[in-house]
Each structure stands twice: as structure tokens, then as C-alpha cells.
Image (tube, rainbow, N blue to C red; front, side, top):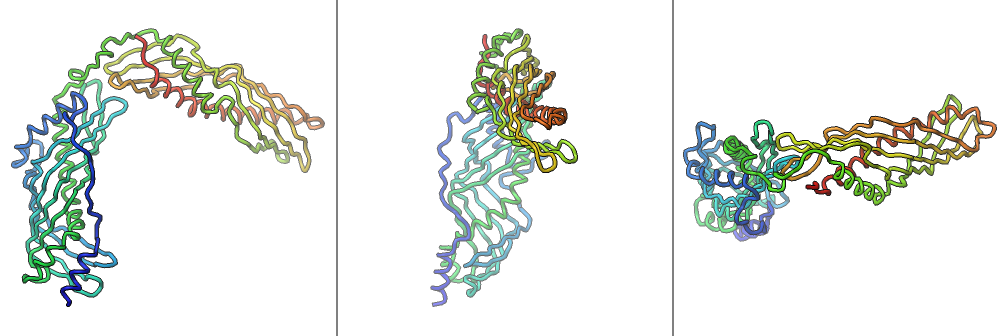
Length: 440
């Protein structure tokens, strides 16, 4: 009776969500460009070296990997509490990897994503555990253990950087996410070495995930370091510009970029209007004028940002594998309107405030990698901000407050417009640059 109840508890307890995952089929070929192809071929060539490792690179033997030190694990759920450890674990099967896909991007948008698959990995070692099932039945055992990881793999991600001077790339901060479809666990002498061990082993795989996760917490840094070191050794021997030469960029004409920028500005003006930035709503503000006077402004509106245009000659230059756009742009006839409530002591009028700015000028340097043609800004500087003319209607007897009001409104409006130009308008320019093809 006791055995039957224990089996029921083991069958019903779920200590981890071990379910089949659909990671899709592999890509043929698995690489997205010539750099990725070289990396895949290099990894395939190193497969046979995993048995002995690569001492010159500081990479230890990886297949088999181990023996690993003592690794504790624990389970604490409503149905099961268990503590234990595994020791002298050997991990076999890493050399049987298949690179399912590898995506490498070099330039401003730099990334490294790899999907590696394994039909099977096997862990062998010693275990020792003690616990309770259902806060009632003792759970114990020690001896050999074997775990088979079925249909799993590694999702590998890393940062990537490219040095246009040396013409070499490298990866950094590599990390690995492990996944699996099924874990099969066998524990020698669980609940003793008799028939009960055979019965429990038939249903014990729900305990496998915590043990597997604990082992992988030790394996992960070893694997990450080996992959990052090995891949960088491959990349060290690659001159990127020798193997990635987009035909459309070989014919890139460098020089006058007026037509290109004019096309870009058409898109920017459309985006500004589409995003409700002309007219733009100005924030309500409370402005302290002096010790006993305060002005609240509201119902603010700004017009004119969609006048953005090229104000001088624009040029395009190329340095190594970077294209640089140098341009002067500006907006003109900017107008703003507020309604304001002036309070001096306990009284004051409602006023209408208008402001105008003849011109605001901006100098920008935008940079794009020649592989993906995605722009970012090296420089975005407001070089001229015209005088802000402020008029106030409705002051009446309080016209002596005109000076403090115009100064406070002008300062606030200046800061608001600068913020709009350096955020929303700048983002619209970047989007338009990325959407506008270079005119050949």
C-alpha cells in the first residue's frame, strides 16, 4: 500500500515544465552571409578537436567534458522537497552538434545569433539525495546516475564589434540558452537497491530538470568561454571587406548629396505631420515671475516643424566601410500660441500669448555601415536659434508684467523646442534616412 501511494505521488508531481518545444527546422545552408559561412565551416573543422581540446587557445577537452565538481541541487514544491548533489559528472555528446542557423550582422546593427542542435547528450556520475514526497514519504538514495537529453540544443547570442581600421570583427559577452525536448533519468539504488528502485526509475524523470539545470549552471560558463574563444580565433583570420562586398556599394558615388537629402527631407516632413508634430501640442506650465506673481500657460500649440529643409550643400564621404553624411538643415517661421492666467497677489487677467522664431539651424553628421545602410548620428547640433519674439494680449493694468512674462515664456519655449528637435524630429530624420535609398 505504501509503495502504491508513493508511486501515485511521484507520477503526479511536476517539479519542472518539461515539454516538447517546436524550434522549427534547420536552414540549408545555415549561414546568412559569407562571414557566417566561414564561422560555420571553422566550427565544423574543429569538431574532431573537441576530444583533446585546444590547449593553445585555453580550451579544455569538451567531449567528454568532466569530471565536474560536486554540484548541489534542490526541489521545493507543494508535493516534493528534496536536497542532494551530483559529483564526478561526465557530459558526452557535444561534438555531435549541428549548426542549424547562424546570423551575423556587421555594422551599426551588429549581432550574432546561432542555433545549435544535438540529437542526444548523456550525463553520467554519482548522486546523493534525501527528501520527502507529499511531506510524508521519505525519498532517498545514492549511487550512479545517468541522464539522457533528447532532441535539445543551444541558442547562442553575443555582441559583435567590427574595427574598420583593422578590418576584423570579434564577438563578446556570449551567452547560451539551453533547451530540450525530453530528459530521461535513471538513479541507481533510489529508495534502496531492490525492486522499488526499478519501479521508481520508471517515473522519476520529473525530477530530472532540477538536476540538469544545476549541472548546466556549471557547464554554461565553460561552454560559453570555449565558443567565444574559438569563434574569435576564426574571426581573427578574416578580413571582413575581402568577403563581404555588396555589389550595390562598390558603385557608391561619393560627393554631393543634395538630391539624396532633399528626398529624405520630404519623408521627414511627412513623418512630422503624421506623428502630430505640426501642429504640436505644447505642455501646460506654471511660470514663477517674481515673489508674488505667477503665470499658468495652457492650450499651447506649436507650428512650423514640418518646414524642415536643407539649408546648404550636403556631402557624402566614405571612410573604410562607413559612409558619412554631412548636412545643414533648418526650420523657419516657427510659431507658438498659449492661453495664460496671470496671478498677481489674488487677482490677474487671462491673456493670449503668441511667439515666433524666424529660423533655427541644425548641423548633423550621420553615419551608415556600408553593409546594411542603417544610419545613426555622430553629431546633431543646433547651431543657431533665432530670437523669440513674444507678444501678450490682455494685460490691461498689468502691462508692467510684460517683461517678466516674455522672458519666462521665451526661456520655456526655447527648452521645449530644443527637446523636440533633439528627440522626436531627430528620430524622424533617422527613420527617413534609413528608408531613403542612396541615389546612384
